[in-house]
Length: 292
Ligand SMILES: C[S@@+](CC[C@H](N)C(=O)[O-])C[C@H]1O[C@@H](n2cnc3c(N)ncnc32)[C@H](O)[C@@H]1O
Image (cartoon, rainbow, N blue to C red; front, side):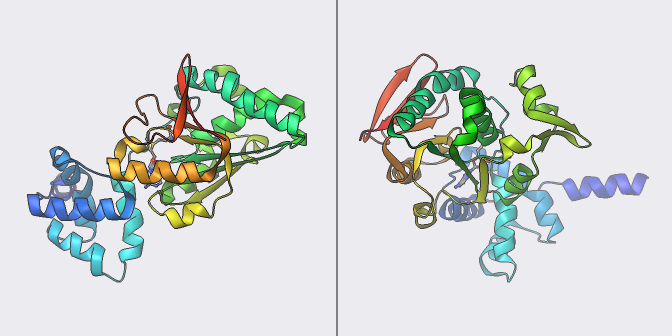
């Protein structure tokens, strides 16, 4: 027992990273994902990567950087790297005030427009969907708005994330209590069923969502996505620097149909990033519209 305890302590001992190693690793991560880590958060690399270095039997960050660049396993390691650098915090019905404003204004407008045009279809893109709570919430909002009429609509929610592990979890659709911390009880009861591992999203809700592992830094792949009426990208661009924010917001602009909307997280803004969208103010949210 004593030796097991001390060996797990030594495995968890943090490996120190030099400033040069930090910059090399930081630039590598930025090139691959657009995620920018400030040098003030150097300690984060030490705490998050030390266990991985021990698993790979690598004594230093310099060795890990070589591994990422030249090893025959480098492609697979990239997925692990993404797991380690991303923040996947999310929950169902996150920011209910924004979602209420979205449902009453943006979603209603798009539904009315499509009905008037006789095109009962809607494409929504959830960019940076983490473990699926956001796109499933959007599917629930559509169920709430369209009720019985939903059966006549063709709805596609495309949900993408950098992290393959998050996409796998999202596809399983089984959640523990933490995922419901911002969720009204009646929503949980109506749209989930009790499962051995937690609460499972009902098939009618899951059916509208298609998950894909995708990097928002990869503009060419993003161009292949279906054009959207609405893009949700909440709590994702905060991890990017200005150049990457411009690039990603440019991809959203190109993807949106004229008159389409971009929804960001409550602490995010297009100020200094893009002037091509028109901000529409609603109590609880700003919806950025691509003028058509
Ligand atoms: C904090 S979560 C936000 C989840 C959800 N949008 C929400 O607001 O609850 C940020 C997500 O963005 C994803 N992400 C970060 N960089 C990305 C990139 N370059 N391409 C795709 N997804 C990315 C992360 O993997 C993570 O799951």
